[in-house]
Amino acid sequence: MRSVRFPAPVLLLTLVLLVYTSAAGGQSGRRPPSPPNPPTEAVHLPPVDSTESSPEKVSPKIRVLVARQPTSRRLPSEDAIYAAFIQRLNDQKSVAATAIGDLYKREAAVRRAKSETEQFVVLLKLEIDSFQGGTIILNSPDLRINFLVFAPVTGHQKYKGMVYYQAIGGARARKDAWPNGPPIKITPEAAAFAAADGLYDWLLLKAGIRER
Image (tube, rainbow, N blue to C red; front, side, top):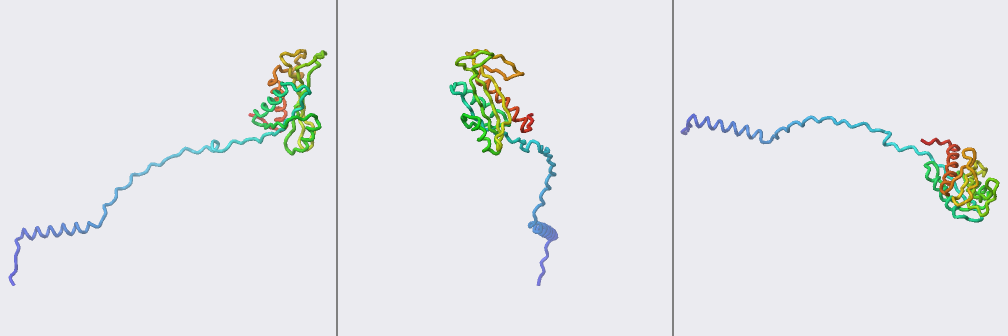
């Protein structure tokens, strides 16, 4: 057999191609390495204030039932006083007052208080103020506003107070002796507010509540 001889340049080129092909085939199944992730900076969160998230402590309300003992004349000012009295109590954050209508005798308020287990019964007793400063006033539009407080279960009277309502068109014969006597007010709303504030102060003292 006759042997074939290739020139040296051809052999060198063939060898280079074989080396390149082998290297490329060995790397074809590899993935290029992923670049390293940049370092993450630490995030510092502000501390949680527990006082902001926690609910505010709320004292339980003092619940009272308010009845009215009207006069025989049923003056328009009586309705205004009764409504304003209850409104003023409910405006206070520590008291919840509920109207229970007219009771015509003190004994009825006592019986209602005995039937209660927790709520005080307040009787707003209205009387015509016809005797002022030694003078009898006929058809007087003025009122004495008495408020009596009866304890639940026992029905015992625990507190009483009084405010005078003197209408602008009345005789105005009574002199104001406050603070050594009951205050005198010249509008139904002002008289009711004064009575409600007096009751409210007693209720807070009785319940041991200190308002901020």
